[in-house]
Length: 81
Image (cartoon, rainbow, N blue to C red; front, side, top):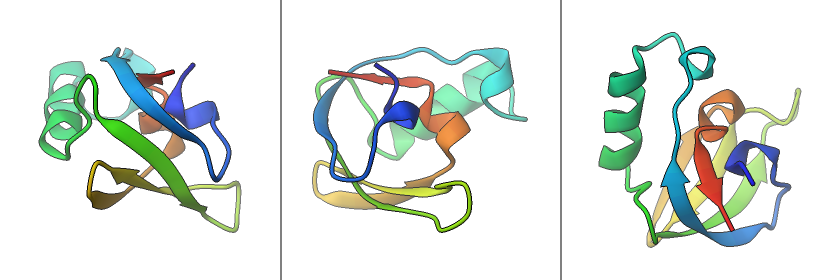
């Protein structure tokens, strides 16, 4: 399942990062690099802490011990279980 589809309170583990061209305005390699730098690596534990008021975007995600805000369309590139 993509992290971008998960609801507030979801807890899981990252299984892969699969970036598609429509995931962001950034080049595919650049978005993947940025997600990895933020801690979204295979095996990392994630939890959705908060959703934005309008359109549930952006989302606040705890990745291991860090809290990061990302857009849902970028979170679609993060596969979790």
